[in-house]
Length: 193
Image 1 (cartoon, rainbow, N blue to C red):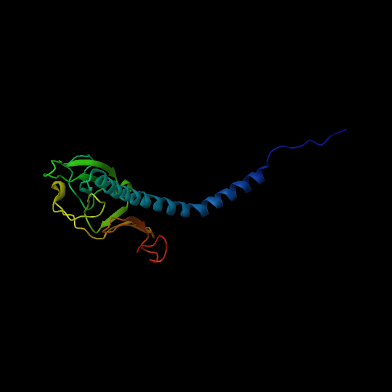
Image 2: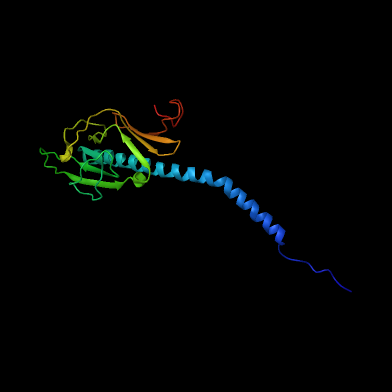
């Protein structure tokens, strides 16, 4: 007597149906994935910029001195770096105080990540100075830079070409540093005020 044999695995038709469904799902998800990557790159630049501003503010408070934060094209973390509005790096530098014998010092530097790959920063101020209390201060030619710090509300608009989303890093005169979405209403929690 013959016993029916159990077949294990999948047949060719079942395998083709499964592969077709996976290809269809990938085709639907791919446009969303590229938008997510674009937004992630833009977010990384805004986060790096916000971190640089926080470093300058905290160092000014910690050292009870004035610290300037500026964007630069220089990759080296030295006092010879110059300010550049379209820089791909940032530097927090201690402003010299001749009365207290405090020399200029590059406190910390960082990269703004993907600025070169389609992400642009439009700044209302090339350099920002923070005083010992963490608030913005006005300084003429801080730490040998050819730009001045003027205390007042400042903003950095971060956007990527071809993207429908923008981010803005704002710094109030009192020193509050915040990232927001300029395209949302001001009443939204992440909208710019």
